[in-house]
Length: 246
Ligand code: 13P
Image (cartoon, rainbow, N blue to C red; front, side):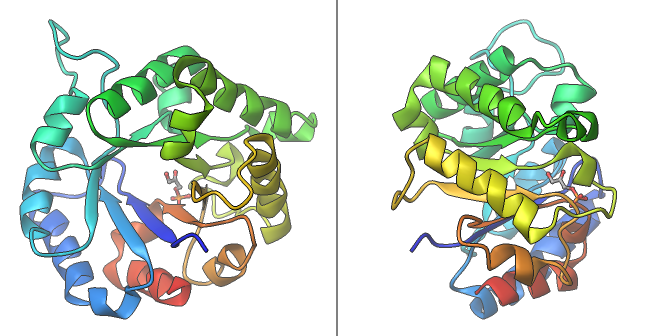
């Protein structure tokens, strides 16, 4: 059985004080979710402080984004090596906000995935369809293309060493969560396409997860955890989610 994973994507929220307070509250209760792995993804400016605050905790830390390049004249960018150097073990790649707001392409995201692994980070590849794509029956096609771009670049074996998060765009920050059946069916499709039966690659669901809907979602056989936005900013709610997965 794959160990469940709960990840909190803070997006562009929080100040220095609130960032460290939040993780201190999570760490203070980590014995209540020992059956679950937890990662937090704070904004880049808070990463060092959060890593320090979690120095004696089992909670891992990751970046929300990174450059596909190793280094160079790229003002405003952060490399995977920099994330690793300050104590991150994970990085999100291809979040739908990066794809839509910042126009990141499947190829660029695949390059980021590749560079992340080369620099010793575990990438969490985010995939998911828009509402229009779902309504047009293109969910599986879109998700398959997003994953195939990464396979073309790194091979299936390396893809499976990462984490995949299925986040339907229409469910992100909208309060409209996918039904457990909708999420399970996409997860099962991904798992079967990758030949993941019995493998320990973790497939997360993300999109309006909270303490009220998490139990049903995480009871699905092919959902190994969650990537949580809004609800990960409230320590008690995030702890509640972790505890009901444990
Ligand atoms: P919400 O949980 O706020 O819908 O955000 C999901 C998400 O985008 C996590 O990466």
